[in-house]
Image (cartoon, rainbow, N blue to C red; front, side):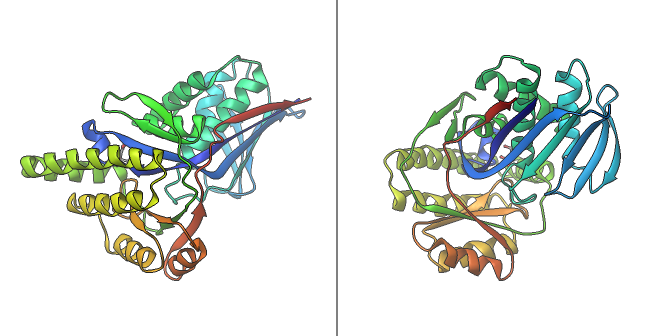
Length: 321
Ligand code: MEV
């Protein structure tokens, strides 16, 4: 028997950093996926392999240890945590990962791999689950591996589409008919999210009245952006992205490289461009109604880029006999 499951990556559209202070956030699933296949291993060893990552290891799922055969371990911690917690019988299996989400692009590859692996395993073991169970459990796995994690990433990877996280931390899905492409630009320099979140807190403690109102204004921009998305108002969405970028810059999380990518995107046809995720390195997101290739090619001159569309397809799982 073979069980296959997949889950999409995500991008934060609005609300990064402000969400730490109970403001809302919006994230979208994108058409780049993690695909996990699980089947019996006849040789009596459990293996984890990803040709896309050039990675192979043998796992001891009871002890949560592994023997590296090739590649860098990285993502293996999530897979081991899932198999240790949910593969009760610990029978030998082969776990194979295909990943078309570039690592370091800010598209939440760890959440997509976690959701896809968990769904493939639930299917393999015949554990009955729905998407709510899957999203909750994937979030717990991310928390135990990372120490802290936002529930937004795993929710988006599970449910697909657009997800709104409210001030009360409730997650809901909503729809848009906006067909514009998003272009994501990313640098090889990745910021340390924990440290960047702390630096914002430090600035907020120094200038509480100013930072409080900036953070609340980001929350208002997020709510207006939800409106723009629901009414398919492309130009309003672009303007709000640019406004949000100015506010994020004032939190001290911008860098020269991120600014360069933002102005390159805007100069080549993006109607909105902003940092996505924590900043301090990392990624930008540009809204490009026409000719996304032009923005993509311009970004590729000095940095990395990809073109992505919002996808409604969340986690999918099936069993092949
Ligand atoms: C990082 O992707 C988003 C932040 O808001 C941190 C978080 O919400 O955990 C910066």
